Image 1 (tube, rainbow, N blue to C red):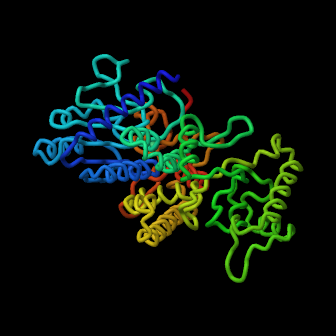
Image 2: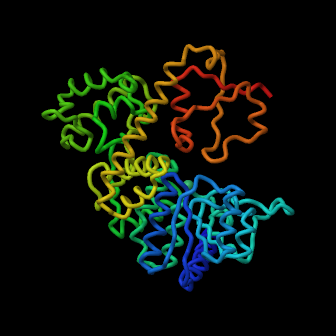
Image 3: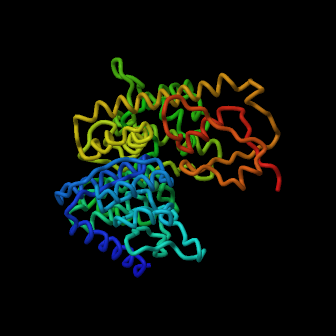
Length: 429
Ligand SMILES: [Mn+2]
C-alpha cells in the first residue's frame, strides 16, 4: 500500500515540477460540484501563492466539443499548460487533440479511461501527467479535492493549510461512513484529516449526527434526520416539536428558531439520551449509533463553520453555476458570503418547486404508473445510465428542471422520486 501511495505522490511531484517551471498562463478547469469547488479553491490558492498566472473556469463534464475547443485555444498559443481538477480522468483517452499542443495535468479520482487498443491499460501520453489513485492501485476513498491537495502539497508543503478543503470535498462526495462504532470520513481522507487538524484548519468533535448544526431549527433537524433514524419523530414535524417541549428544550428564543449549536450542553445531553431511549423502545439493534465525527472549521463563522453544511453550500453554488462564489467563501473572501447565502436560498427554492411539482402530479396518470414491485435506477450525475441498462427499463423518467440549472444531485433526484409515485422499473432479466 505504502509503495503504491509513494508512486502516486511521485506523480504529483512530477506535476508540481511542471507547474513550478511554467512561466506562461495556465488554464484551470474544475468540476461544478462541491468536490470540484473545493478542488478549485485548493489549486487557486496554490497557484496564487506561487504567483502563477492562470485562467480558471468550471465545467460539468468534458465532451468532444469542449476538448476540440480547448485544443483550438492551445493551438492558437493562448496557453500551453492545462490543469483539470475533479475532472478529466474519464476523458483522458480523448484528450489527444489538446496534448498535441499543451501539457495536461489531471488531478482526479474518477475511473480513468482505457487505451482503445489494449482494453486493460489505462491511457498514457508523454504530455499527460495523471494524478489519480486508481492508476497506482490505491483503492481507498479519496476525493478529487484530496488529489488536488496532494498535488498542491507537492508544489509547496505550506499548502497543508488546504487540508480542510479536501475534507469538505470528500464530505460532498459522500465519502463518510462507519468503521465499527466510528462514523467519519474514510480511507485516505483520514490521513488528510490529520494534516488539517495539525495545521489547525479543522477541528474534529464527537457529536450526534444531525445535519444543520448552525442553520437548521432543531425540530426540523430531528424531523429530517434519516440516519440516525428517530422512531416516531423522523418525518413528523409536530412530533419533533412535542418531543423537544417534553424535554424542556425551547425551540425558540425570542422570535428566532434555535439550532443544535444554540442548545446548552445539558440540553444536548438530555436530547441525546432521549433519542437513544426512543431508539431502544423501538428495538433498534444499535440504539447508541447516533454519534459521529463532526468537522468544524474554526476560521469560518455561522453555518460556514460546519464542514457538512459548508459542503452543501459549495454544492448549491456549483450546481447554480456560481461556483466561483463558493471558491471565494472557501478562501475566506467575506465579500462573497452574502451572495453565497442568496445563491443557496435560490437553489433551495428551486428544489422546493421540483418537490411540489411532483406532489401536484402524483395522481396524474400521464406521469404516474403504479406497480406492486418497482426498482429505481438512478444515473450518474454526469454521464447518466449506460444504454444497456436504459434498454431494460420499463420507463425512463426525467425530473424536469426550470432555468439553466445543471443536473440534480442523485440523492435529491432519489428524494424527489420517493416523494412521488413515479415508478421507473427494470424488467426482470
Ligand atoms: Mn469528486
